[in-house]
Image 1: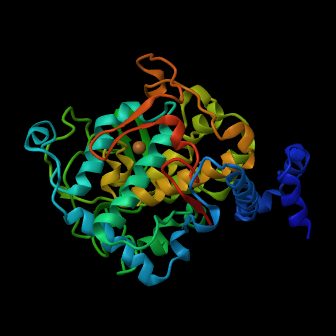
Image 2: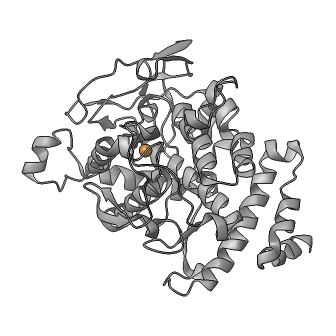
Image 3: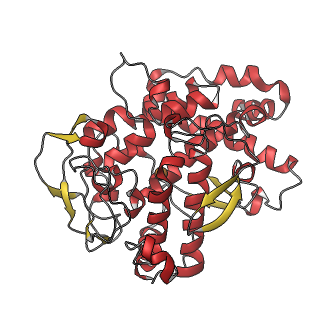
Length: 394
Ligand SMILES: [Cu+2]
């Protein structure tokens, strides 16, 4: 009854009072995920209303695609997803012989996604279109699974909060046929020097090749570029076949991707500059005296470690897609809590942390998607229930 009242209040413009009231959660609820669930429900109610009011879109909430958490999928659906990913990894590339000269590492259709991400890395991270670019990037991947590999469902997302305490024990990494594959083989390191970031980070519980489950025999064809424990290299797109390494890391997950981290991120920041800045541990929005945080974005990458920790090459790791679906979900919830102010909120320039300095981005710009799509207008990528999209998170 009370929930319906809150939802009813949220539907009209003077709803701020109701919203503010409901943001005062006990710490226990923030830590358990209960608060995030409440926020997700509130946002979904708003989004539903917003989509009904939006008569420019052909997307109907009632018939939209639903993305679900990995654990909410049946075992068969989990396997259907990893089978479809493997299908894309086994399909030949479509790029021309001419393009192959610049992108020799591209061996498969799947690699077109990896090379596109590597090539654009400096223009899609810690900048204005990070969230929108990745929203469309993972959407095109989902679409490719459906259209080229007969996948019948949607991209799952990975709610890190369930795994933050002991990610190495997660059902995602148990290595059976219904998992995302095992952890990497244990290298028993305690710390890792991350040369490109000039920092030492705590090591995880693996380090070596994934040894069991769907991706045990995966060949990663490009990189490493900026991975922890590797020397930075100046090649990026060469063919360099190697195994899929993982280093599942409870020290990072416990401090960067717990329910507390994602929930406080959503609750603490009203404006997009801070929300996306803290999410990515952008130094312009980080207190240098506070304990080190990787943000939920970098935190998820480093929780899996190995190839996923190598930001440039990270889409080569199948966990990339479900980690970034969760990043997109967190943004979707944040936008949905105040769509009038947040739906079209962007901030920043073209380049990573504005280095080298570049112009502010605007919503009428066309975004480059390399091999995987023709350019898309920034403004069309702001709403998962409009533009090219028609999905929501449950
Ligand atoms: Cu990325």
